[in-house]
Amino acid sequence: MSEKIVFLDRDGVINEFPGNGNYVTKLKEFHFIPGSLEALKRLKDHGFTVFVVSNQAGVGKGIYSQDKLDRITERMHKVVNASGGQIKKAFYCTHTTQEGCDCRKPGIGSIKAALSMMKKPIGDAVKAYFVGDTEVDVTAGKNAGCKTIFVLSGMNDRDVVSTWKVRPDYTVKDLLAATDIIIQNGHKKSKRQKV
Image (tube, rainbow, N blue to C red; front, side, top):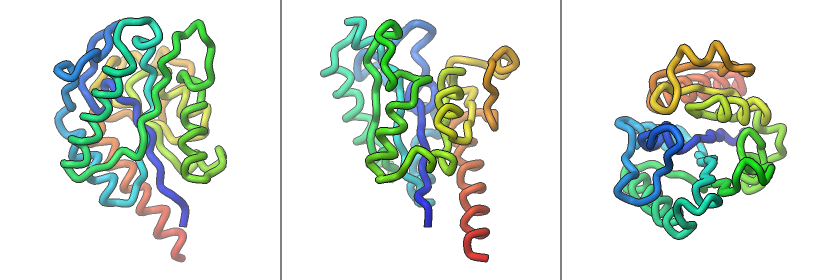
């Protein structure tokens, strides 16, 4: 049986988007989007392994420290776990665009690292989903071979998608709505495998 994997951007998908050009720099600025905790619980209950893949260049720019990012992440994990969900690991790229590293989306270094943790080749990303709120997220998902879901709970609205070079497979309101698609398609695949 193949592993069911979901990659999530963080800001605008799990927690409220901090505003264009801004970052979540402290605990009091991190607020879960309504429904996101329920979505994470549902994914766990249906056997999906969830990873966060997020660009956090504010650390590299000196806007906030690695320690503050670690504290925010620790709280995120704690609240998600208490709500019945689970994030296996959060992968952050703290580099700036100029550094040109592969872990910064739309690069797929973090996706490769997550698959490596699961002892899966990059080709297994075709069975995975990437949920994000920006063109960079959709492009990263497509670059890795994932199915992509664009959520309207973050940085962009539906109209902007027509200007993108890469289009998402699905566009939905938020992570909870994305979870409906992921679970429904996951069940279809498992039924096919039994035949």
